[in-house]
Structures are given as structure tokens and as C-alpha cells.
Length: 66
Image (cartoon, rainbow, N blue to C red; front, side, top):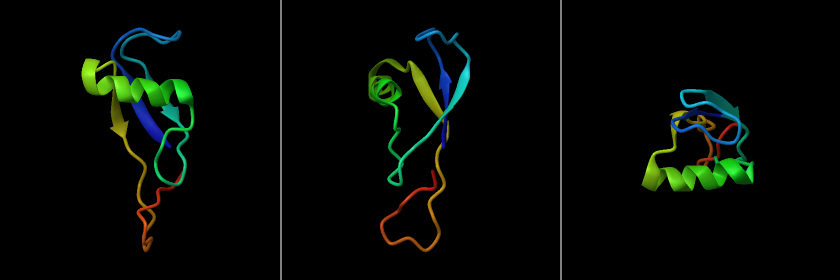
């Protein structure tokens, strides 16, 4: 899971809201809409990551817990 803070009102969420999203074992957001918003955030700061997934201890390929 990953926690995002929404900085701009969008998709029915108010600015300042936080949401929790599911991620795959590599830490990629599973929802296409939010995955695209994270890429856009590099330019426009529309969302920010509050909490990232924790790596699985002892993993060789930096998998994340989902």
C-alpha cells in the first residue's frame, strides 16, 4: 500500500485529502488513473507520496509488500 496526499482537487477528491492505494510487488500503483497522476506530479505537484511501501526483508530484487 502507498499513501498519497492530493494537492489539487481532482477525480472527486478535495485538495488536502489523503488516499491509500494498492501496489504490486515492485511498488507500482495498480490503478491506472493514479499511476498517471504520480507521473504528472513530477511536473505539476498535483499529488505527493506520504508513505511508500516497505521493502520485504531478505529480498534480492527489492520487492515491496502490497
